[in-house]
Length: 220
Image 1 (cartoon, rainbow, N blue to C red):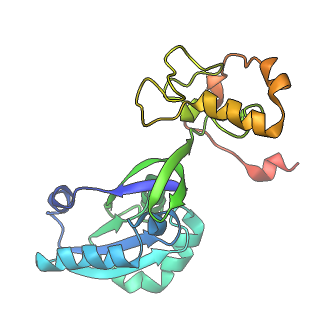
Image 2: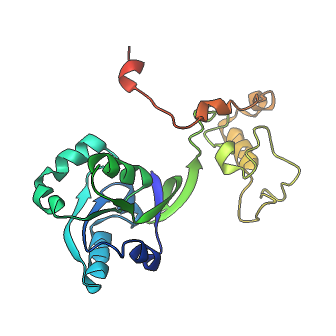
């Protein structure tokens, strides 16, 4: 899931100061789980804007904010309110904001959140970064633990000389990714084959941006 954090509300309100009426769009998936774009957060921002004498024409939590066509269909029932809206505020990730830009070509669109990373929710509203979206996955070789992301140095054959007591020299709060990988391989009984493995240089061209994928073409 895409992990987001609320922008500073004072700074956000300053950004929006030239507009008098708004429509707020959240997301029922990642942003709701992050506590940045669910119904509660939409109502909170609505209240802040109304305290300043501004008008909120409508609030809506999209099923999947980054799904352009689906969100466009969902918003049809708000046509009248949207026609009267001077500014759209998107309370999801950057992809959700850019989906709204495609939908509202003639209206200013602003994000209320900062998009941080792709991560896993370990407990309620507690998140760990797990994937760097590098375009060439090596989890099949590293016991399902990604050194590109979990190692601050992104070392592909570790551990490095800075490992101490199973932790990274960058911070004692960071477990060494390669120690974690080794310990997992031990549990799986795969240490002998792991000792013989050397990962080649990373193909960073696989993550050149912007990337596109036509899944329909991939099926042919």
